[in-house]
Length: 144
Length: 162
Image (tube, rainbow over all chains, first blue to last red):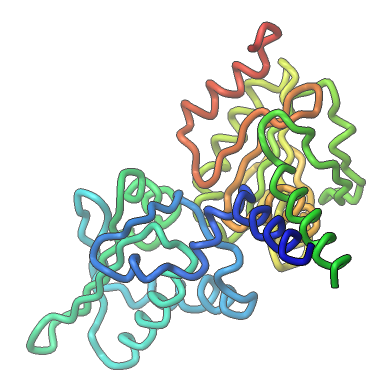
C-alpha cells in the first residue's frame, strides 16, 4: 500500500501542468552545454529568485548597469550591450547574469571581455521572439 | 504514514487536473486593488481571461498593453479579464504600476493557494481562458502569440463554439 501511494503521488506530480516548468528553476545539466535541449517559454520563473534577490536584481543591479552601459549593438536575434571592463562593473554584470539565467532561462547570455583592457560585452540573444521581448521590456537597456 | 501518503497522492492528483482544459476552473476569492472581494463565480456566464503576472516580470509587461486592447475590444461580447498579481510587495506598489500602465481590467492580489490550485504557476505570465460555464478552455504559459490568443478568445466568445 505504501508503495502504491508513493507511486500515485509521484505520478501525480509528474503529470502536473506545472511539471514542465519545474525544470526551469534549476536548469538541467544539458542546458549548461552550448545547445539547450529544453526550450523554455518566454516567461519569468517567479520561484527562481528570493524576494531579496529579486529586489537586488530589478531595483538595484538593473538600474546600475543601465547607467554604466557605454554602447548598444543590435543583432539579428538580440542585443549586445557594452560596459567598462573594470573589476567593479564586471562583478555587477556577473551577479546580474547569474540571476538572469535563473529567472529568464530562455536567454542565451554571452559575456566577453575584449583584449587590452577593451570593453566588456554582454550579449542577450535567443530564439524567435527573444529580440522582440527585449525591445518591448528592455527599452532602457537598449536605448543608445 | 499511510494516511499521509494518501493525502499527498490526492493533493497531487488534484493539482494535476485542476487547470486542464475541460475541467472546472478552481474557485477563488481574492482582494482587488479597490478592496473588494473578487470571486471567479462572480463571472459565471462570461468568458474569463485569468492572467497571472507580476510587476517585475518582463513578459507580463510585454503582454499587458495587448490585454488592455483585448479587453476594450471584447468586453461588450462578454469577456472579463482578471489580472492576478503574484508580486511580493503590497497593493500600493501594484496599484501604482497598473495606474501608470492604464490597466482597464480587474487586478487582484494573488497568493500561493490560488497559484497551486492552477498548477503552481511557477512561470509568469500564465493565462487561463475560462468558458462561460466555468470550465477551463485554454492555457498559455509565457508571452503568447497575440494572434493565437485573440483567435482563441474569439472562438470561446462565439455562441457556436465547438
